[in-house]
Length: 171
Image (cartoon, rainbow, N blue to C red; front, top):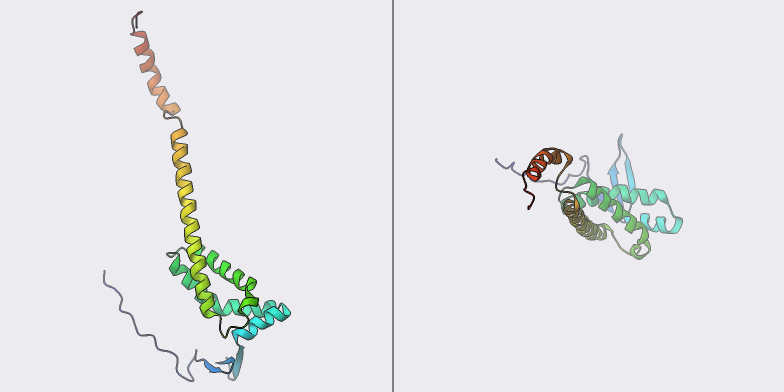
């Protein structure tokens, strides 16, 4: 099979859809119908989450970075979508728990990526351990299970009885 050639990825140019112009702590995004919508910077959202326990601020952080975290997790867990979702959820739970420690950072993207890496490694390790335990349990069940089934006994019973009848008194 031939590989599909990779196309170069070009960043959006000013005035095109998807163009972001970074200003001091904010991003201006072309809004539908003209004008601009100012996005709050990550440190400010984190500060609002800590100071006000703002669910909206935290939801904005999650929405903004969910794609990065999920795609990194998906790559690191070998394409297992459910495990990648679990890893993503773990990362954002850790973000909520460790927000106080992260409040002084200029950006949280590198922390999110590193946290995703650690969470994915832990998830893969735990999955392998669980699979190993399940295989061992299955092997133990196979050992403990009777070797002959009822259907097998139906076949063996007449042969066994005939062999016993053919035995002499001395045998």
